[in-house]
Image (cartoon, rainbow, N blue to C red; front, side, top):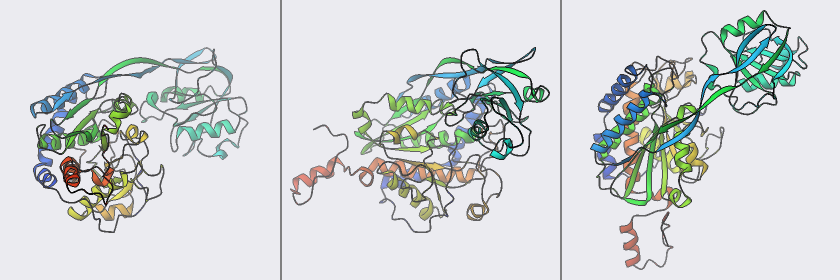
Length: 490
């Protein structure tokens, strides 16, 4: 998981926020970072017993599901663990033939396929510099028309390298990994290029340097296997089911490590709030918590869930709150930019998202005394499926691979010039990779938002409580329009 923070300065205005509610106050008081830390320890030990990972499709993920679901059942929730299927990229299984030598050649995600039988052409290795293939000028020193071009990974996105190579006349690109780069098996272009883009490992890339200029046949592919995984869904037994408050966090890690910050922190914080609320809590709006599977392979679990809902079932969801990485060791305090006030990236969320941003930002700034900044709705976390169907969303994020600026270090402390999470998607994302103060603060914000919206979502979607509606009707409130009820059957 990762999102792009805006470069805007911290909010400086006091926020009107959301009217204080008794439930929200109680939930903030009860939810505790020390208690949530116990869940982080559990996730670490689950990973330790299962090959160092909690990735979807592994015993470590299954054990994480059982741990979360078991606690929720004991707390009185209605709990389900619905299954979904997905395609997993298992291994590169294409070929690159150069003379008498054959190498394994994979295909990046979102790349177009090579024609049947592959592409046969001269293979040329682009000279390597600090930014290989990242500028059009990198191709100015040679003629790459009709060539297969091998480019070292690094310094810019794969799509930039592919587009520059295609503009120089290349008919196929091969990305060679760096010595310390993560496996390119799940690497993605972000958007299709006009030519196929494959990948090879670091050792193969080094060998190809000595073979540059020879004719080669590139036929990239990957082995795909259909897998089954599960989400965890838990709903309170009381409250309106036609105006549900939903909050989620992804439960899976990447294969490389235990995923304690990404996203053990979001999962543990959400679990702490859910347990303190309790499945039999007296709430006006039902609260539905979700722990998503297979987020790290493309938001698969949350998207499968949204896809399973009818339009009427979507209407029953008042809003969605997302918590992905809330304890980064070099923490920032980002709130999803629901109103696009930062004018960065994807634009605003559906109506109600701006109000959710206000609720979270006002609590963190005015009650905790911590400045916040916006982060764009990039679509790189589990809110994506919800906002795509018009459900308002918001949430919190403390940073991933992005670099903390000097301005941000002055706001929040920490170290400028390094990543918010230097162990992002790495084996070192363990119990030592969490800022407990940021973790605790964000748990309070989760508790506040869940408690507030479990009481009323009026500022998000105009829905009032059933009791208030009855009062208005008895009073004969004919001078004002009847408040809208989301998902009410007429």
